[in-house]
Length: 235
Ligand code: SF4
Image (tube, rainbow, N blue to C red; front, top):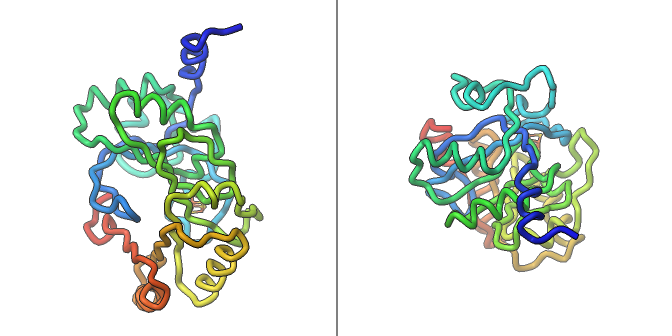
């Protein structure tokens, strides 16, 4: 039988497929304004029509690059690097990042077990957050802040999981039409979600979507999330 330290060691050898790792300001949800280190995983089958990270959808082995090439790429691309948590910690330390909040995003990061990634950073004093569509089981540390942005009736055909909705610390929903609002209300009812904070996020900063989000937030005592980073012109 393995000792716990052996288990820990074997956990650290999971290789995550990393599309990007960078420091910025979190622009969405409860942590808006928080200096954060974003770790973007490659791969997502959900296929949202308005997705602004379509370059993360496919995992093509021909797109595998080394860590330096991934980290220094000049613009968004489909390339990714296999990294274990020790390599991620080393890269973050080398950069001298001051942020102490890790945002694990994608793609759909919950396609893989993220527990060892959360644990490793939390043991070094970081807080962790995952952003997920709610269509995969959320495997993270107990302390990890879970943002579920439920992607309802998307082309990929994935259902929103009850386990993900119940684990959510916040629900962040993109809206552009009344139908999106109705879909969210039905989802909250279906999963009996009553107390989790709900954020509405206007899709693509369109004025009509923003007005709808403001009116709906006021009517339901929900919160507005405006993707501050897009207004600031930062990643
Ligand atoms: S779940 Fe996220 S990454 Fe995947 S298609 Fe939708 S918006 Fe894009």
